[in-house]
Image 1: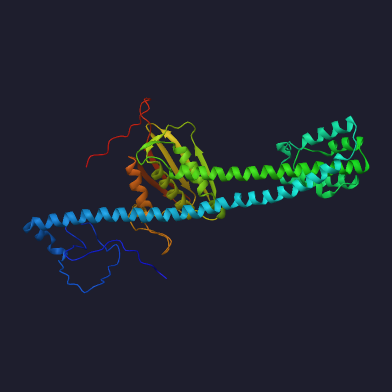
Image 2: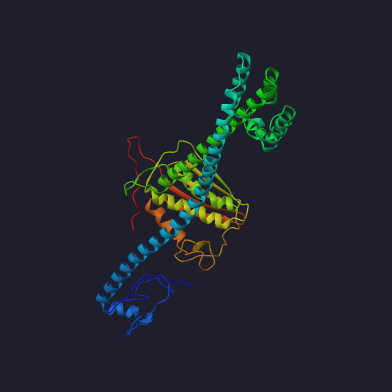
Length: 411
């Protein structure tokens, strides 16, 4: 089912359609009449005569066009913001779901492993150990707090460690299931051999059970902390992306931070399409004086468009550099490119190459207007296999804490 969204309403005495000095060539939408009405129409060929003979009519027409443009711009901007919010919410829900699910799994596993660790500790406490045995046990337990060297951290290396530890445990009366938590730490077969050199029988079995349960508890708690850290970072990215609680006035904006937050927000869509999203940001770039939330709306529109343009497994690079008195951001993709016959129209309102229902045709028009509001510039270069959108923003002024924006061009 298709839903129509009303853009404007006309009542008795209103003017509509193409007016004198209007550049309208085709109707931007459909008009629906809800009540019986009488319309007085004037053919376009009579416009010139009207404007000469009746200047008052010309003034009315111009005022109507200004009001119409103002209302239409406000409505289209709001619609595009709502569409962006929908995409943003979907991406955020996807991004939050993964660490939230991981945190829930880790919490459940932590509760199970704590019970096992308590039982193992109670059993071990009933065994009398000498100083030498305790020293070796403490030495191996300390290795549970460490991760394996980075050069032994590939999936294949971890599998080899599990196999080696499982084989040793099987030979010494241990449980081969204990190999997995031990293999995720720096514990080695050589360390277990030192334990076997001073322990045997039930003493060794109980020590191994306690040791593996300690490793499992630490791993579950580490995974839980990592998952909640990712959630916290996403929440911080959302706040940075939307500029929640910030004044609605231009202020110094960290462009690199905005690009990083945006990339994190759209990360799920990139992964779903197996797209490599690279950030190439110059360190220590000066801030731009801008509306932060509007600047991030520019980035998410450009990156979302690039994600739609690239094929499965494609590549997008986001670069940011200071070039003379500008901060230049480039969004580059290896998609099919923009055909030369439509390149000059991509910033036009309502122009879209996407199927019906998948694009409003307002995204790049909104982007261009937002860039101009920041006193910046935007252009595009495209060929098959490479499309680059370039946004230039004014950099900071003198080191007085104030940030200067060049004056708007005269009209």
